Image (tube, rainbow, N blue to C red):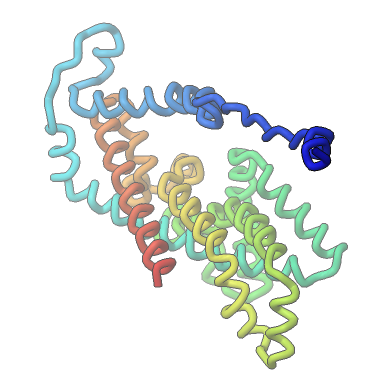
Length: 313
């Protein structure tokens, strides 16, 4: 009886918490607005470009004349033109060189930023932000003045400071070789700030304890950088390099402005400016833009595949 009484007087066991059912949409429902905006802003123009590339679409079609389907004719005309292949090769080379130079300079400045004092770091950050935030056309005006044939600062410094008399009155944008030097300087100058801030943010995530332990074990600064810092930052570096390749392949404004300043268009065209030159042949412009998209996907796909292989090792 006592046991029965104790059992009766014992408090009831706490009830198991009731789990609320999450709605089926859940997190995926939050993606719907962004996906809708992307589909409208990017999807429709992409589909429209793809459709036009299979048509004969010019100025007359803009005023209501129906477009005629020509199938792969636009692609055949473009890919059978040796000049188009020259521009494609030139664009890929320009892209890879600029991406590599941007990454090297950006990583060097990021490491410098992590090691200098607060005042120097702040000055460097402000300078990079000013370079990054300057409108492209405004900065292009300054760069054209710097490389001007008669009044440019670059020619004056080369002649009066370094004593290179042959650079007096040198036209940088008339010759294709020096044109791409100028274009590379401008593109790299505008791209470096993004790389610096991204890499610097990655450097802040490297554990100090790991670096101190490696230093106590006798690893030099160079060994710590290549054996510890770079492997830890590889995901950041991979994404930044991938974005640089995409951006440098489709560069347009810098090349176009320099061409308008007197550069030979045919010898300096890249894919972006060549597409723009088909302003009255929308079908060929659409076909060339599709080819450019395929090249971009091929380069990025190859790079992503290499990254995945490295992760599996």
